[in-house]
Amino acid sequence: MIHISERLKTVASMVPKCNTAADIGTDHGYVPAYLLLSEKCERVIASDIAAGPCLAAEQTRNKYGLQLNMDIRMAPGLQGLYPGEADAVVIAGMGGATIAAILEECPEVTEAIRTFVLQPMNAGAMLRQWLSGHCFRIVDEQLCMENGHIYVIIQTVHSLEKHLLSEIEAELGPCILKKQPALWREYATGKAEQLQNMLAQMQGSETAKSSEKFKKTAQLLEEIKRLL
Image (cartoon, rainbow, N blue to C red):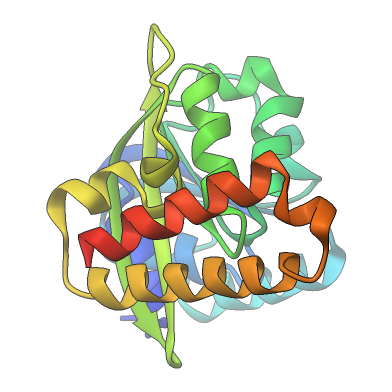
């Protein structure tokens, strides 16, 4: 069995059992290979915008003898997929704004995918707000620790309506707030520290201190402190 990092293992664990899964920005192709070897998927597509990662994914495929079930494609975002080709799609290790842009740029492909597993490296709140405003429903979230950093992984599906989130739901995650899984206190404490630093930077400007952003950030910080 292939050995992958805790972050990627958690990402893979949130992919539902299905016929075909695709990994966008696949890097070394570890997640698609893991999905095949753990028999979660019958077929996988490893896609990346650059030639180097595609070559690395090819080496992974060959190492584990997955040539018949693992396609490797060089393409930006979802452009390497045909509508309806994949049941589930992983987009991990990118910024939240980049992930949202990828979901938005190929609507005919996005609409045909049942489940997305997303792991933003930053701007998680922005990504959740985008999802909630574009008729996606966040059905699960998990936290994992790797090299002293806490990562959040989001599982989302299409919805017939928008699911608007509160500020604290967007910041911490609606499922994390509900489940309060292991690591959630460390995760929330880290978010509070980030907001505290943001407020401290804004304190130096009278314009910033009187802004709506300052007020909302302070309110959000107080909400998180009350939770803790």
